[in-house]
Image (cartoon, rainbow, N blue to C red; front, top):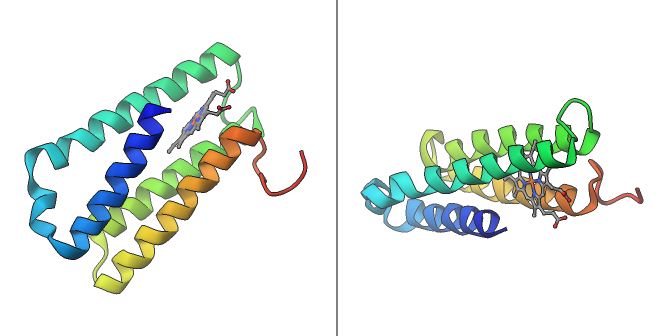
Length: 118
Ligand code: HEM
């Protein structure tokens, strides 16, 4: 849960810096800390999947989480790096956050369509 909150906070912060003071994105800790947190987050996800013996491409909700995570990574990279215009990067930043909350909703409900009844 700490990794989830830190990962989200660092992504939002880097988005704000991307818009207001992009030079801060080049600071050493800003370049490395998110990778450390995200690696620990993914490591705990794999450990928890092993503990409860449910796996992506077997359990629907974990398939949804993994695919959404890939989408989140692509959108995050467009937002912070690859987006060609400011408009593109801002749009990707917002959609990435929506995807992040979708992942959290799937985690809490264990339902790939968290807005429907299980
Ligand atoms: C940005 C990425 C992710 C976020 C924000 C996230 C978020 C969460 C949250 C908030 C929980 C706690 C749910 C609860 O309290 O019941 C959780 C649990 C869990 N997550 Fe993730 N998760 C992410 C990625 C993944 C991935 C990629 C996998 C594996 C494919 C995964 C597997 C699991 C498992 C197995 C649990 C334990 C569920 C349980 O035992 O109740 N997570 N995740």
